[in-house]
Amino acid sequence: MSYNPIEDDLKFETIKEQVIEELGEAHFEKDKGYWITYFKAALKQNKEQALIDIVFRWRKELRESERNENRDSIFNPAGYLHNLISKEINIHKNTMDIARIDNNLVDYAFYRQGKRSNEPIVYSKEHKNDITGNIVKSEWRVDSNSLIPNDQDADVFKVILKIFQDSGMPTNNKVHYSNYEICKHLNISDGGENYKMINNALQYIFDSKISTKDAYLKFKDKIFLNNSDVFAEIRLIQSKEIIGSKSNSAESMEMFKNEIVLSQYIADNMRLYYSAILDWDFYISLRFSVSKRIYEILQKERQKTKKIHYEFMLLSFAQQVGMSVKVTRNIKHNMKNALEELQSTGYLKQFEIIKKNTMEYISFSLARA
Image (cartoon, rainbow, N blue to C red; front, side, top):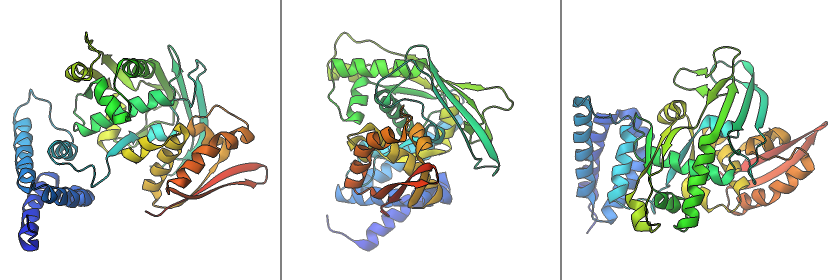
């Protein structure tokens, strides 16, 4: 197919007008880079008409959803449209495969690095309320009916959030998934042992309970979850149903979809994009779980401030990462490989541990790209 800039620009403008009509110009401009990427990918694959057809089909489904009160509405039209496109046009080689995680779960660890244990995660700190500007003391505690989740369990849960996002974030907060699907997102082999790992991971997440005070922000209402001195409780997963299969083959497991219902608070924040944006391919390629968590934290800060230089108190940062060690010497030793990995990938330009009076801090300089 020859390239005709005038004709192709007209095709793009046709799609642009339709999307803006549904989403509004502000939403389109926010994702304009993606739209340009989609269109270029469609041109390369001779699928520009398919892209137009997808937009028409999406518009029709939105209209039907609005008319049919018995049907779950498409709460996040943009996310649903992205998902429709990705099923027919190969865009992953042309743009980032995005994953999101509630900012509250970035600010406070809901899992522990390394081995699972029954010791609760207890965390408190003074910080500035992003909404009011006031200094508040937040308290965060993670308990479990079984064991506190670890980094492996957290990765499985992050895939659940990704599937929720890619499916358009339905208003019933339900996520339908297969173990085979999760294996592919995690870039691990499918099969009995990994399916068992996934089921166990989600059970540990389901068993865990978070108690917060002036910590978990309900972004929609611009208030913390608690409205008094009483601790509020959150469960990341409200309910789950594992559908069994007589066979552990990839084909059979893909046929049987399991169901999870997310916490209303998590789902609401995700829908409002109160979440850190991760390049999923980059995230899952990292060898060390501490690398992943540091990347996650820095991504959240980067989106918030648009800066490339950050500094944290070392002990507090280690808690946020989910590390159990409480001696700075051990923290530095255990973080070394992760920091070097992030630097070798080009994400970190440099890092440094510095001492100010009696306190130690860790500073980061990120690459601009």
